[in-house]
Amino acid sequence: MKILVIFTGGTIGSTVSGDYISPDCAKPYRLIDAYRQKYGGGAEFDTAEPYTVLSENMDCSYYPRLLASVKEGLSADYDGIIVTHGSDTVQYTAAMLSYTLGLDCAPVMLVCSNYVLEDSRANGLVNMAAAVDFIAGRYGRGVFVPYANSDEPCRIHRGSRLMPHLPLSDYLYSCGDSYFGYFEDGQFFYNKNYSEKNSGKHYEIGDNCAKESGVMWISPYPGMKYPDLSEGTRAVLLGSYHSGTLCTESESLRALAAEAAKRGIPVYLTGATGGPDYESCREYGKLGIRVLPEASPIAMYIRLWLEGAAKSALGMEMAVGGDYAGE
Image (cartoon, rainbow, N blue to C red; front, side, top):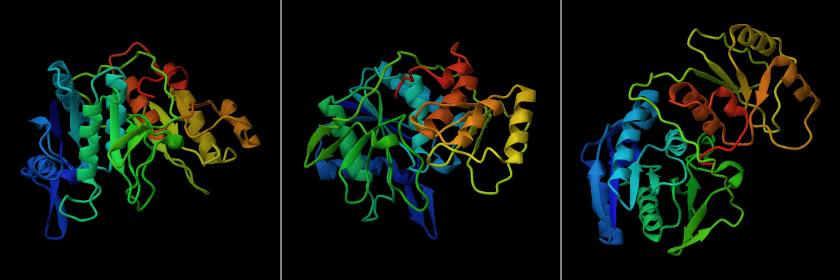
């Protein structure tokens, strides 16, 4: 079995130096050595390193380099690809790869660690082992993130379904707890409640992406003042409270919606679910707010970025309906 390991940095490729955690150019290769020492040498690893960065410093300009490296690996007919990544923004990169690669490619596994590998609390090796075992077992195709929350089995998440981290937590969850499967006691189990649709669509992004996405993502809180629209804004993504609501009585929100309509900037809302709405939701249509389907807010943010950055004829309207590749 041959696996390409693409190193990009992050905690899993870093070392504690003094009071700070910094990327270590030798660390990624130690990950492979540590894996072999603990789990054996059944896999043959080749390596690539398109860039090294702490994942919190990621911007959209990194994505084409990673995508090119992954596609090169897929064309070389590896059994699977492992991308090491920082846990802070792994959800965003996983969604980008999901929408650009789709569901029908050799498994691409994004592996991260909640702590540097020397830390006894680190889950990096467990996640790495799950990635290798998933590839070896041919349990699925497309983009996945193996991740073991503390005292839980290592779950395999579909790349487009990961939710944002909760504050002060390194746990990862899928939207609606719709993870793909999990490993326990060396065996893989599919999640019987998991389902997906494959639209067959995917994006192709150019070699030179701007650092900024052009998508203004705004989270609500009581008494907030909505920001002004900048010149570079081409879409607005509104977060919502857990019931899919916003304060639609807010004059600040109304001003934002009016300005967006005047400038032809679409405004979307994420976080709404099916079922009866609260009366405040009646105002969405009047304000020109388009409600997105149930999905990870991160996936919707990446989708909107791709609508502008990708070489795609789908158009922004596709963001409000239809099947999503990788979901």
